[in-house]
Image: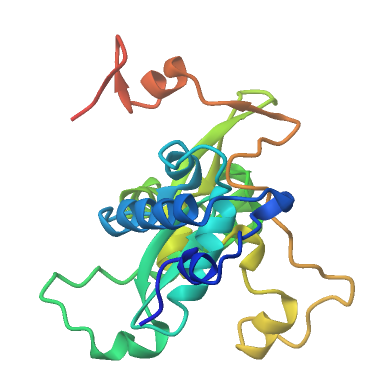
Length: 243
């Protein structure tokens, strides 16, 4: 069984180099790997990299530690995977068929919900009116509610345009569910055509849009405020969440 990062270097009397060329005590690196491993293992959801970094010994590069752990778990039954700027343990893809669960199966999305989710994923930040313009049909509030209840879609901000419409974007749970490390890992044009999701008669100048980063606001987008949340019914007046 391979040991946590730092052990083999210590036995050989060598000092490993972290990212940036900083020399780190092998024992400190080994302890940092154990701490990071424990934090991710104990969490049911992806653990933010910043949260891990705050709990590691001083002078240890968190990205170096996480990459070492990712390599360590690469050939095992569970893999350490990056989800946006967070980390999680997930069942190795080739072993997913042996996992059995008694949990209630998640309701399958309707065709309309899948279309809306795809539009949000590729065009975010996007408003409801823009979603309807792309689809060519009106989008019901229920469709968006289903996606938000699933935890895959969220309010991003307000568009700096008349009426200040709300913009939608995907969440970290969306990336985690679909096995994506970041939004740039969404299937490209050739992959979509190969999967039969695009017709062979698409315009020659068509390009799959590249969405912004998870927390990156567009130039014409303002962040959601507490007042916005109250207006949208997500917070009761005074800042308390609606139950």
